[in-house]
Length: 404
Ligand SMILES: *Cc1c(COP(=O)(O)O)cnc(C)c1O
Image 1 (cartoon, rainbow, N blue to C red):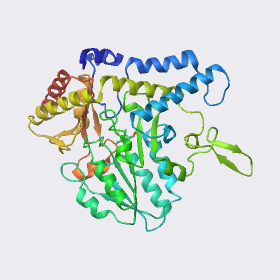
Image 2 (image 1 turned 60 degrees about the vertical axis):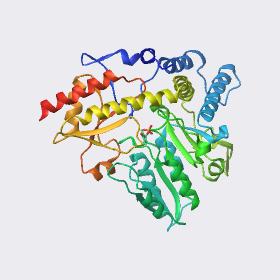
Image 3 (image 1 turned 90 degrees about the vertical axis):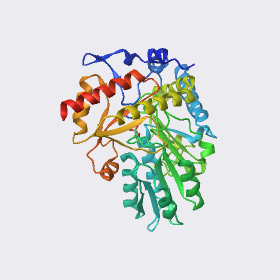
Image 4 (image 1 turned 180 degrees about the horizontal axis):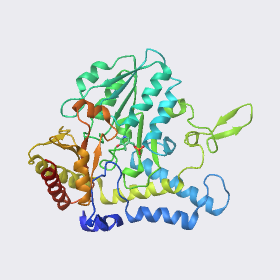
């Protein structure tokens, strides 16, 4: 059962005060807070079985290796991935995208086209620009609408036999828009283009079935789903992962090394050079268990309630404009008060103990589209409450009064 009080008790940080006020943490789109079980998993590793993996014959190394590989399998099952070696541990979404972009440098040529959505995070724009500069392929942008949704007709028209790759996020971190990735993937495959989905913003809200989606690559970060920073995964279809060259050279990723020639290790190790974030991977598994224990259905119902309530109450404030008004949305609200800089609103909210994000949210093209310097972004997690939404509304009203 969904008991908000006992859920909140799982998160030590939610008990603290900021500027003399109880913390109201509404910056979940930037990173989530961590439950005690995840913190314990990290402490347990360093306290009880800290050792390097895949190398030693000794007991601690075996134990660490078993737990790390068990986490990989947990992640595999969570995302309905066919094979454990299709799960590549990375340092996060950004690294996963760079790994794929780097690999495609040898597969693209001049005249090829790469489609990227107008709703992307900078980490899903810049690596592709670098790739296109290197290969001479052309980067085309799928336009967005006033509601902050993707223009799907334009997308269909842009696809052709020249299209080799499509990159799109599952959920926009700046606006909360849920993109129709099933349709995007289906259409791309009709012209034999591969699709990479950036799931960094999605996986704390939904549980994607990657087999059913038939996506070619899917990347995400643990830290937005109650796990630690510095770890994430790249899922890739086996055929693609075999085709792509290694990303970084080093230990772990080789089969045999001589000065004449090195042969690479099998998947997944081919892409996992060096000592990984061992306790991060293990604690990522713990975070996934924790989220499944709460239940994604419960999470969705609660977050949608918060989203609806907050949208309704914020909309009542005169001069307040919400950006991102599509029907398919998750619990992210980007807004501005007329003639008031978002930074000033954020500063006043902080004084009241309310943590929101202000700025361009690593998505400057979206801000440019709306011709604004940035927004105030409140993003809710399953551990937020209606009372916290009320505090936000009161805080925004106070900011408006003080600043206008
Ligand atoms: C957070 C985020 C990223 C970047 O994730 P990192 O963990 O910083 O690599 C990329 N895309 C989206 C949509 C995000 O929300």
